[in-house]
Image 1: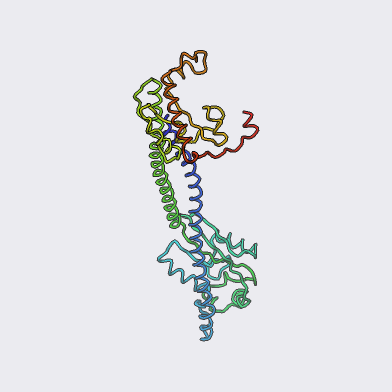
Image 2: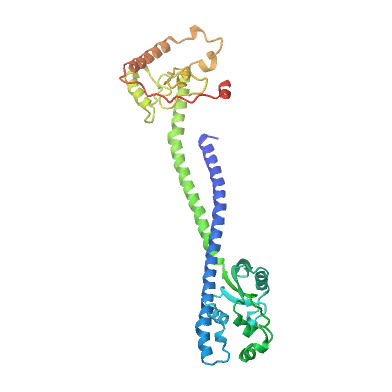
Length: 378
């Protein structure tokens, strides 16, 4: 497995983990946003219903009473609000508004089982101001906003205490089976607004998929760009250097010069100094284009790098250095190649001369931080 493949696998693994985390966060955020939007719609509907009820109670009912009408259903605030939303429901059948009661005057307002559960919660906790609930229906999930209907006005008991005190017109219209026995400050029902969540959830899911698709596209573009840069700046130069090293180790004398890349100050200076000695088969100067090693061991210049001084190694043909003579009893004087020694001495003398006569010092390395006791002990 080559370096580029390992790089792609590592980056892809990191992306998959990041994408999973981002997907979980984005999915929750999209769901919460959809729920918040639906709740906003439900709150708006509830306010509209309360506005219609207040208008009927404050404007319509006084006019009807003034005309001497014995009893007119149009003067009932809750009836006006529900009638208004019944007309709206023709165009929006999945939306509903209901003033449900456990003991209603109008049988049509009788609370369903799930509505009765909400009303009983209001009856059990007088401090409860609203309930937000969600339930599944054949058309999809529905969010409901419920507010308690409490008897806070004593005049309401004129119609809802006992049948003998209720207006005859109300008795004639609704009978005496329900709507009586109410008590002051009692939660007799709940204003329940139900809004479908399917449309909001569909929008949220679509936005979620767009988000994930966008992340995937950004990753693919980034991965492609990084692969191009990796190949141009790392893989090709390393491959070229490795090929040259193999050729030199085999004793080839016609290996082309390796031109250092980059804008490093040292590389630029050494490139100028190397130009006049091309005929000495000068190849390259190690360390000219990358920071010298500061780890213990390595070449002899390492100790200089440790105190912030530039250290550069001049490499020669290794010949049998790696396969026979390196650190062995075969590393004898007669194995020294006279031509290589003369060539190396000339090149190093030329670089020393240029360094000594340069008007200013060579760019320095930053002094590394001292090792800890444990690291120094190693």
